[in-house]
Amino acid sequence: MSKKIAMIFAGQGSQSLGMGKEFYENSPIAREMFEEAGKRINVDFKELLFTENEKLSQTEYTQPAILLIQLIAYRLFKDACPDVNAELFLGHSLGEFSALCASGAIDYVDAVELVHKRGALMQSACESIEAGMMALVGIEDSAVEDVCATAQEEGKKVWPANYNQDGQLVVAGMKSDLIALEQTFKDAGAKKAILLNMSVASHCALLAPAQDALETLMSAMVKETFSAPIISNVTTQPYNTKAEAVALLKEQLVKPVKYKQSMLAIEGSVELAIEFGNGSVLKGLNKRIVKDMPTLNISDMDSLAKVIEEICN
Image (cartoon, rainbow, N blue to C red; front, side, top):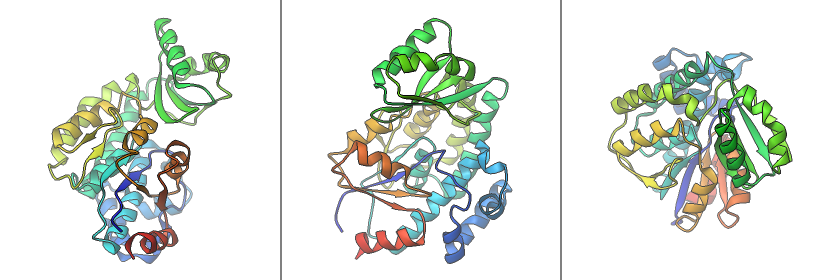
Protein backbone atom coordinates (compact mmCIF):
# COMPACT_ATOMS: atom_id res chain seq x y z
CA MET A 1 0.00 0.00 0.00
CA SER A 2 1.36 3.41 -0.93
CA LYS A 3 -0.95 5.54 1.19
CA LYS A 4 0.52 8.30 3.32
CA ILE A 5 0.18 7.10 6.90
CA ALA A 6 0.27 8.87 10.27
CA MET A 7 1.39 6.51 13.04
CA ILE A 8 -0.13 7.67 16.32
CA PHE A 9 0.08 6.90 20.05
CA ALA A 10 -2.31 7.64 22.93
CA GLY A 11 -1.42 9.05 26.33
CA GLN A 12 -2.06 8.36 29.99
CA GLY A 13 -5.55 7.08 30.64
CA SER A 14 -5.35 4.47 27.88
CA GLN A 15 -3.98 1.84 30.29
CA SER A 16 -5.92 -1.16 31.59
CA LEU A 17 -5.12 -4.30 33.54
CA GLY A 18 -4.11 -7.12 31.19
CA MET A 19 -2.96 -4.88 28.36
CA GLY A 20 -0.29 -6.48 26.22
CA LYS A 21 -1.03 -10.00 27.46
CA GLU A 22 -1.75 -11.37 23.99
CA PHE A 23 1.49 -9.91 22.70
CA TYR A 24 3.39 -11.42 25.62
CA GLU A 25 1.84 -14.87 25.24
CA ASN A 26 2.23 -15.05 21.46
CA SER A 27 5.42 -13.17 20.62
CA PRO A 28 9.01 -13.95 21.68
CA ILE A 29 9.90 -10.37 20.71
CA ALA A 30 7.26 -9.03 23.10
CA ARG A 31 8.58 -11.21 25.92
CA GLU A 32 12.11 -9.99 25.22
CA MET A 33 10.98 -6.37 25.29
CA PHE A 34 9.12 -6.96 28.59
CA GLU A 35 12.32 -8.37 30.09
CA GLU A 36 14.71 -5.70 28.78
CA ALA A 37 12.40 -2.85 29.81
CA GLY A 38 11.91 -4.39 33.24
CA LYS A 39 15.64 -4.72 33.83
CA ARG A 40 16.22 -1.09 32.92
CA ILE A 41 13.86 0.30 35.58
CA ASN A 42 13.71 -2.70 37.94
CA VAL A 43 10.03 -3.39 37.30
CA ASP A 44 8.38 -6.76 36.65
CA PHE A 45 6.11 -5.68 33.79
CA LYS A 46 4.37 -9.05 33.72
CA GLU A 47 3.32 -8.57 37.34
CA LEU A 48 2.54 -4.87 36.81
CA LEU A 49 0.26 -5.49 33.84
CA PHE A 50 -1.27 -8.89 34.47
CA THR A 51 -2.01 -8.94 38.24
CA GLU A 52 -4.12 -6.67 40.43
CA ASN A 53 -1.90 -3.96 41.94
CA GLU A 54 -1.86 -0.30 42.84
CA LYS A 55 1.25 0.64 40.85
CA LEU A 56 -0.44 0.64 37.44
CA SER A 57 -2.37 3.76 38.46
CA GLN A 58 0.76 5.55 39.66
CA THR A 59 2.11 7.94 37.05
CA GLU A 60 5.75 6.77 37.23
CA TYR A 61 4.64 3.20 36.40
CA THR A 62 1.67 3.99 34.17
CA GLN A 63 3.79 5.91 31.69
CA PRO A 64 6.44 3.24 30.96
CA ALA A 65 3.75 0.53 30.85
CA ILE A 66 1.71 2.37 28.21
CA LEU A 67 4.81 3.22 26.18
CA LEU A 68 6.11 -0.36 26.30
CA ILE A 69 2.89 -1.86 24.93
CA GLN A 70 2.69 0.80 22.22
CA LEU A 71 6.25 0.10 21.09
CA ILE A 72 5.69 -3.66 21.11
CA ALA A 73 2.65 -3.16 18.86
CA TYR A 74 4.71 -0.90 16.60
CA ARG A 75 7.67 -3.33 16.49
CA LEU A 76 5.45 -6.30 15.60
CA PHE A 77 3.79 -4.31 12.83
CA LYS A 78 7.10 -3.09 11.40
CA ASP A 79 8.58 -6.60 11.50
CA ALA A 80 5.61 -7.83 9.47
CA CYS A 81 5.51 -4.80 7.15
CA PRO A 82 9.06 -3.44 6.87
CA ASP A 83 8.30 -1.52 3.69
CA VAL A 84 5.39 0.43 5.20
CA ASN A 85 6.76 3.70 6.54
CA ALA A 86 5.20 6.62 8.33
CA GLU A 87 4.68 9.92 6.61
CA LEU A 88 4.73 11.37 10.11
CA PHE A 89 4.34 10.41 13.77
CA LEU A 90 2.00 11.93 16.33
CA GLY A 91 1.29 11.25 20.00
CA HIS A 92 -1.16 12.53 22.59
CA SER A 93 0.78 13.77 25.63
CA LEU A 94 2.85 10.76 26.79
CA GLY A 95 2.27 9.30 23.33
CA GLU A 96 4.63 11.89 21.85
CA PHE A 97 7.48 10.00 23.55
CA SER A 98 6.35 6.78 21.86
CA ALA A 99 6.28 8.73 18.59
CA LEU A 100 9.82 9.90 19.26
CA CYS A 101 10.93 6.31 19.79
CA ALA A 102 9.06 4.98 16.74
CA SER A 103 10.79 7.62 14.64
CA GLY A 104 14.16 6.21 15.71
CA ALA A 105 15.24 9.23 17.77
CA ILE A 106 15.48 7.27 21.05
CA ASP A 107 16.02 3.59 21.88
CA TYR A 108 12.96 1.95 23.42
CA VAL A 109 14.72 0.93 26.66
CA ASP A 110 15.96 4.51 27.04
CA ALA A 111 12.40 5.71 26.36
CA VAL A 112 11.06 3.40 29.08
CA GLU A 113 13.53 4.85 31.57
CA LEU A 114 12.86 8.40 30.39
CA VAL A 115 9.09 8.28 30.88
CA HIS A 116 9.48 6.36 34.16
CA LYS A 117 11.55 9.27 35.45
CA ARG A 118 9.22 11.80 33.79
CA GLY A 119 6.31 10.30 35.71
CA ALA A 120 8.26 10.50 38.96
CA LEU A 121 9.19 14.13 38.25
CA MET A 122 5.55 15.00 37.56
CA GLN A 123 4.45 13.26 40.76
CA SER A 124 7.14 15.05 42.75
CA ALA A 125 6.10 18.45 41.38
CA CYS A 126 2.55 17.86 42.62
CA GLU A 127 3.15 15.88 45.83
CA SER A 128 3.00 18.85 48.20
CA ILE A 129 -0.11 20.37 46.60
CA GLU A 130 -3.62 19.14 45.90
CA ALA A 131 -3.45 19.08 42.11
CA GLY A 132 -6.05 17.65 39.77
CA MET A 133 -7.68 17.57 36.36
CA MET A 134 -11.29 17.98 35.20
CA ALA A 135 -12.93 16.86 31.96
CA LEU A 136 -15.43 19.28 30.44
CA VAL A 137 -18.03 18.11 27.94
CA GLY A 138 -20.21 20.14 25.58
CA ILE A 139 -18.49 23.48 25.96
CA GLU A 140 -16.69 25.69 23.44
CA ASP A 141 -12.90 25.99 23.73
CA SER A 142 -13.12 29.77 23.87
CA ALA A 143 -15.55 29.61 26.81
CA VAL A 144 -13.14 27.42 28.77
CA GLU A 145 -10.25 29.74 27.97
CA ASP A 146 -12.27 32.74 29.13
CA VAL A 147 -13.23 31.09 32.43
CA CYS A 148 -9.61 30.08 33.06
CA ALA A 149 -8.28 33.56 32.23
CA THR A 150 -10.77 35.23 34.59
CA ALA A 151 -10.01 32.67 37.31
CA GLN A 152 -6.27 33.32 36.99
CA GLU A 153 -6.87 37.05 37.40
CA GLU A 154 -8.62 36.18 40.65
CA GLY A 155 -5.61 34.20 41.83
CA LYS A 156 -6.88 30.73 40.98
CA LYS A 157 -4.58 28.17 39.38
CA VAL A 158 -6.39 26.48 36.51
CA TRP A 159 -5.47 26.07 32.85
CA PRO A 160 -6.70 24.34 29.65
CA ALA A 161 -4.67 21.11 29.41
CA ASN A 162 -5.97 18.78 26.67
CA TYR A 163 -7.84 19.87 23.53
CA ASN A 164 -9.24 16.44 22.61
CA GLN A 165 -12.13 17.19 20.23
CA ASP A 166 -14.88 19.75 19.77
CA GLY A 167 -16.86 19.83 22.98
CA GLN A 168 -14.31 17.85 24.99
CA LEU A 169 -11.54 19.69 26.80
CA VAL A 170 -9.62 18.82 29.97
CA VAL A 171 -8.46 21.48 32.42
CA ALA A 172 -5.74 21.14 35.04
CA GLY A 173 -4.72 22.96 38.19
CA MET A 174 -5.35 23.07 41.91
CA LYS A 175 -8.09 20.64 42.82
CA SER A 176 -9.83 23.14 45.11
CA ASP A 177 -9.92 25.71 42.30
CA LEU A 178 -11.30 23.17 39.82
CA ILE A 179 -14.06 22.22 42.24
CA ALA A 180 -14.83 25.88 42.93
CA LEU A 181 -15.17 26.52 39.19
CA GLU A 182 -17.40 23.54 38.38
CA GLN A 183 -20.61 25.57 38.35
CA THR A 184 -18.89 28.40 36.47
CA PHE A 185 -17.91 26.00 33.69
CA LYS A 186 -21.50 24.71 33.58
CA ASP A 187 -22.86 28.23 33.44
CA ALA A 188 -20.49 28.83 30.50
CA GLY A 189 -21.97 25.89 28.59
CA ALA A 190 -20.46 22.67 29.93
CA LYS A 191 -22.97 19.82 30.04
CA LYS A 192 -20.67 17.88 32.34
CA ALA A 193 -17.69 18.76 34.53
CA ILE A 194 -16.04 15.57 35.75
CA LEU A 195 -13.20 15.65 38.28
CA LEU A 196 -10.72 12.98 37.16
CA ASN A 197 -8.96 10.51 39.44
CA MET A 198 -5.55 12.14 38.95
CA SER A 199 -2.93 13.17 41.52
CA VAL A 200 -0.98 15.29 39.02
CA ALA A 201 -1.98 18.30 36.97
CA SER A 202 -0.57 17.58 33.54
CA HIS A 203 0.27 20.23 30.94
CA CYS A 204 0.05 23.28 33.14
CA ALA A 205 2.33 25.64 35.05
CA LEU A 206 2.27 23.47 38.18
CA LEU A 207 4.73 21.12 36.45
CA ALA A 208 7.37 23.80 35.89
CA PRO A 209 9.61 22.30 38.64
CA ALA A 210 10.00 19.14 36.49
CA GLN A 211 11.14 20.88 33.31
CA ASP A 212 14.89 21.25 33.83
CA ALA A 213 15.41 17.66 34.99
CA LEU A 214 13.44 16.34 32.01
CA GLU A 215 15.53 18.47 29.66
CA THR A 216 18.73 17.01 31.12
CA LEU A 217 17.47 13.45 30.73
CA MET A 218 16.36 14.00 27.16
CA SER A 219 19.59 15.70 26.17
CA ALA A 220 21.45 12.54 27.17
CA MET A 221 19.11 10.10 25.41
CA VAL A 222 17.66 11.64 22.24
CA LYS A 223 19.55 11.19 18.94
CA GLU A 224 19.47 12.97 15.57
CA THR A 225 17.97 9.98 13.73
CA PHE A 226 14.37 10.76 12.77
CA SER A 227 12.85 8.49 10.12
CA ALA A 228 9.94 10.91 9.72
CA PRO A 229 8.81 14.15 11.35
CA ILE A 230 6.87 14.24 14.63
CA ILE A 231 3.94 16.59 15.16
CA SER A 232 4.42 18.67 18.30
CA ASN A 233 1.60 18.75 20.88
CA VAL A 234 2.66 22.30 21.68
CA THR A 235 2.84 23.87 18.21
CA THR A 236 0.93 21.35 15.98
CA GLN A 237 3.92 21.67 13.62
CA PRO A 238 6.39 18.97 12.53
CA TYR A 239 9.91 18.69 13.94
CA ASN A 240 12.80 16.32 13.21
CA THR A 241 15.85 17.42 15.19
CA LYS A 242 17.13 16.59 18.66
CA ALA A 243 17.20 20.25 19.70
CA GLU A 244 13.54 20.70 18.77
CA ALA A 245 12.52 17.45 20.49
CA VAL A 246 14.21 18.41 23.75
CA ALA A 247 12.84 21.96 23.74
CA LEU A 248 9.29 21.04 22.71
CA LEU A 249 8.86 18.09 25.08
CA LYS A 250 10.21 20.20 27.94
CA GLU A 251 7.60 22.82 27.01
CA GLN A 252 4.91 20.14 26.66
CA LEU A 253 5.00 19.62 30.44
CA VAL A 254 3.49 23.05 31.03
CA LYS A 255 1.57 23.71 27.80
CA PRO A 256 -1.72 22.20 26.64
CA VAL A 257 -1.89 19.19 24.34
CA LYS A 258 -3.39 20.42 21.06
CA TYR A 259 -4.47 17.01 19.78
CA LYS A 260 -7.56 18.19 17.93
CA GLN A 261 -5.64 21.00 16.27
CA SER A 262 -2.80 18.62 15.34
CA MET A 263 -5.12 16.19 13.58
CA LEU A 264 -6.74 19.02 11.66
CA ALA A 265 -3.27 20.33 10.72
CA ILE A 266 -2.23 17.00 9.14
CA GLU A 267 -5.59 16.19 7.55
CA GLY A 268 -4.50 17.14 4.06
CA SER A 269 -1.08 15.50 4.19
CA VAL A 270 -1.98 11.94 5.24
CA GLU A 271 -4.69 9.54 4.13
CA LEU A 272 -4.75 7.04 6.97
CA ALA A 273 -3.79 6.82 10.66
CA ILE A 274 -2.71 3.74 12.60
CA GLU A 275 -3.00 3.83 16.40
CA PHE A 276 -0.60 1.57 18.29
CA GLY A 277 -1.15 0.33 21.85
CA ASN A 278 -3.90 -0.55 24.27
CA GLY A 279 -7.46 0.31 23.30
CA SER A 280 -8.55 2.72 20.59
CA VAL A 281 -8.86 6.08 22.34
CA LEU A 282 -7.47 8.12 19.46
CA LYS A 283 -9.45 6.17 16.87
CA GLY A 284 -12.60 7.27 18.70
CA LEU A 285 -11.49 10.90 18.81
CA ASN A 286 -10.43 10.88 15.16
CA LYS A 287 -13.88 9.75 14.01
CA ARG A 288 -15.18 13.08 15.28
CA ILE A 289 -12.22 15.27 14.27
CA VAL A 290 -11.20 14.10 10.78
CA LYS A 291 -14.12 12.18 9.35
CA ASP A 292 -12.43 11.60 5.98
CA MET A 293 -9.26 10.10 7.45
CA PRO A 294 -9.83 6.51 8.64
CA THR A 295 -7.95 5.26 11.71
CA LEU A 296 -6.92 1.64 12.24
CA ASN A 297 -5.67 0.38 15.59
CA ILE A 298 -3.30 -2.35 16.77
CA SER A 299 -3.93 -3.38 20.38
CA ASP A 300 -3.72 -7.20 20.29
CA MET A 301 -2.82 -10.08 17.97
CA ASP A 302 -6.18 -10.06 16.20
CA SER A 303 -6.10 -6.34 15.37
CA LEU A 304 -2.44 -6.71 14.36
CA ALA A 305 -3.37 -9.44 11.88
CA LYS A 306 -6.23 -7.35 10.46
CA VAL A 307 -4.03 -4.29 9.92
CA ILE A 308 -1.28 -6.41 8.33
CA GLU A 309 -3.84 -7.92 5.99
CA GLU A 310 -5.21 -4.52 5.02
CA ILE A 311 -1.96 -2.56 4.78
CA CYS A 312 0.76 -5.00 3.78
CA ASN A 313 -0.90 -7.42 1.34
